[in-house]
Length: 92
Image 1 (tube, helix red, strand yellow):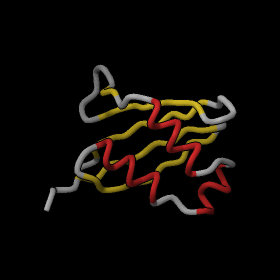
Image 2: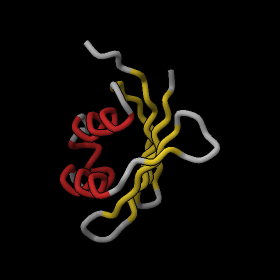
Image 3: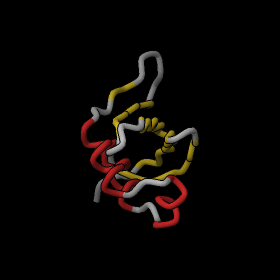
Image 4: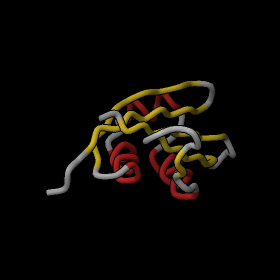
């Protein structure tokens, strides 16, 4: 069994910032799990859908932030060319 770490996900979209936590064996696996476990209510509130979010995040590359430890960023655009920005922080 792989060790899973706790990550805090900061999702910025359409003027809102949404924060949640998820466990994963790596930042990218945690992000994938985070997308898959969002509820229909989440997508309704964000006025997007799982496919748009998944595609936007697959297009981007997760990069570590300069000057920070255990912090990554990924961005993309949805089907209406709106920016999606996600920061991931290893929390433990």
